Image 1 (cartoon, rainbow over the protein chains, first blue to last red):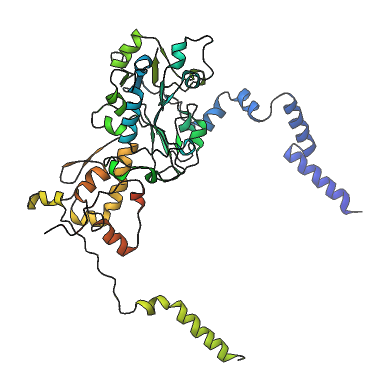
Image 2 (image 1 turned 120 degrees about the horizontal axis):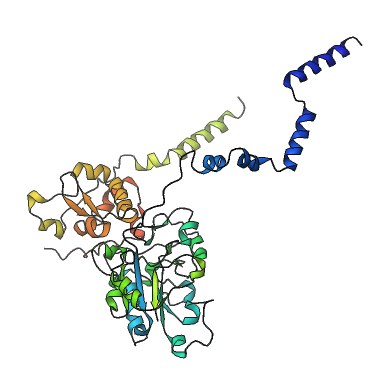
Length: 283
Length: 138
């Protein structure tokens, strides 16, 4: 009987010191939420921009836009010249023999760096109605587009595939764990998975001894002949059919490819996806 | 102690089995690796210039790190030129630089790798030089 008023008094005193009791706090919290003052919104109203800066830049000022690269390798493919007999086959053979690409003879296990497809599949979704018959029958040479915004690079969990500063989307087979996310991300089907040991389908006598093979369980694709560029050579396919293919620096307005593109109308694959391919088809 | 003899016999068998590998190989030494550097490419070099990318001791102890660095240099940084401590330039490539001289993987790489029980997976992808079958040398 005696202790009770004492305790109440003490509590009231404490509450006066804290200046806010639970009931008041919940009331204020509820009201502020009602007026949109809760969570991130409150930060935006009271301290605009501060939260974003703290989350992304650790308080540092925003990075400057990177300067235009000096080199962005690209390729033009003259579709009409590819239609001449033997050209496409010659390019594919040159590429696949230089890079020890196996041929399993079964589309299920197929590994391809450079291949041929028709208009309908190459430009799937963008095919024009009533397209000229001869265009429909052109053999379109397909390869990795070495996109400016490569979706495969974004999804790779190990950074095994990455975009070099010169625009080449490269593969580091040492790091590839074979998860095939990049294959799912690539809108062009330019990547192949090694279901089987590629050496089983390669002839030991026909190895290019200066280039490795791949192992089972990694994803592979065209590398824009990065190893040949390092030696000052043109990509193998361009060397095999210089009349149909051209390779050069897209960042240089006076380069061979830019001069070709200035004169001739061209198409690129699946532009609507925004990946900005570096391979241009001249039509 | 109950069942002392059972425990002692069991212990003896256990210790015997556990140290089996030592009993089996007691007194036998694994052959010391014999590394051969008498490939045609190396023989072509005149004696005083017969040097590897770095000196012998460095290569013996650190070649694995060097190769690892080379991999990242060539592949990820796009830098295919290595300048060694002597200031000489080399092309960064396992197949085109290392194995051009050391074209005898079985008598060179494998010797120590087998001795120390390591099995690097370089050769799953990188093609080893074709070795001439032994016996046609006079």
